[in-house]
Image (cartoon, rainbow over all chains, first blue to last red; front, side):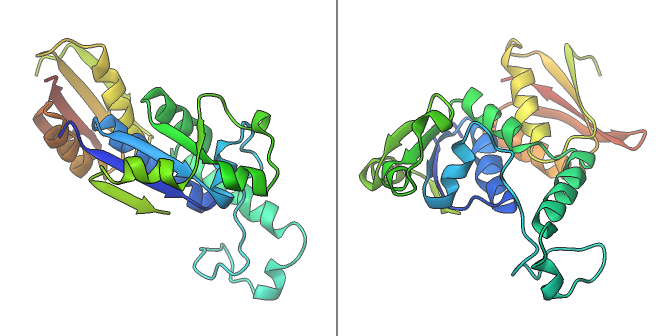
Length: 156
Length: 75
């Protein structure tokens, strides 16, 4: 119903973990919810203008379906991460799964508020010019102010 | 069933059928009917949940030629 609110903390920057916050945020916004996403630590990668560096690694990821069974030692080899990432992206495209860029645009278009964690921006020495426009910068207190009023609050 | 606008979500996966249905409804007038075609099996449950939460009425939910077809009346 109208008037519901959701807050999400996005802490991960790998391809598979980048999807849930953006899927839930765009869907909730489509349902008329007011949504804020607070990006901290590796989640900040999702706010970069260029998302092409977002990757998925088969290493230490035993649940990842592989075309052929692969010993862990093979996952360590150079190029394995790039290969797994391009295979995953190709599969997503084939199955009609939105790109991260598209989901992020849909969120912004639907007025989902994106907040970048100022502390981790400083910690990793990110340049604000690397991030997309239309986002805000804040800290834990900024997040709690909205989170305290929400119906759904998730840590991803 | 008569409809005023159609949105073809064929080939799209969650959450695009819902998010884009919402976008399609945005420039329609209250009472107008949107026909949505989708191939994502998840859209059957999702469209019902979308209608329930947004007040847009799901007039019909069925399948046609292997695709899912929905009629939504804008609130």
